[in-house]
Image 1 (cartoon, rainbow, N blue to C red):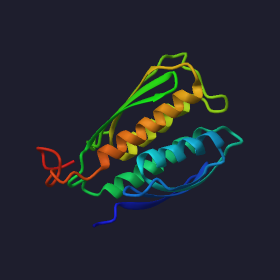
Image 2: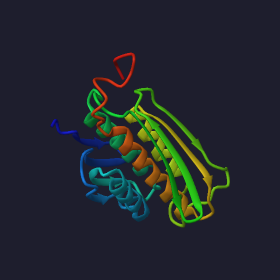
Image 3: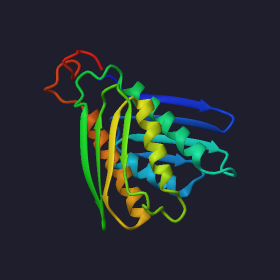
Length: 196
């Protein structure tokens, strides 16, 4: 079977990122971004997506976490897009309702080649103690734009900032896993246009 994997390097004045992914992995990861909570979220993303993910990111953390988080999302999106190739035989769509204690999040994905992020959460949604909630949306936007996917994230309810971020990352991983999976009943490109 054709290996659905990719390695990407991104270097800017703000970050240096080396990332590899195997879409048909076992959820094995090695993650180092310098941001403990983000490492935790990406480890969860790898495990729940069954993606083998290796990531070494160095960023200007003395400024803030934004550049590292956004550029990681960009690089991950580029890697997943390359690994998917022409998308023959994939399910294309994925959906996950993810509970995390008092929190429930819904994530829906279409690997449509039409990038869009719809991110719905209350303006006063709490952050994790050491990770601004706004960065969860920034990561999702960078991923959607560079994977060229239509991603809808909705926080249905929740109170704890850690649980909220975790539910979204896990839900995103599981929805993407479903969308990326090969379906033996799908012949060719999963679109009446015969292209994605």
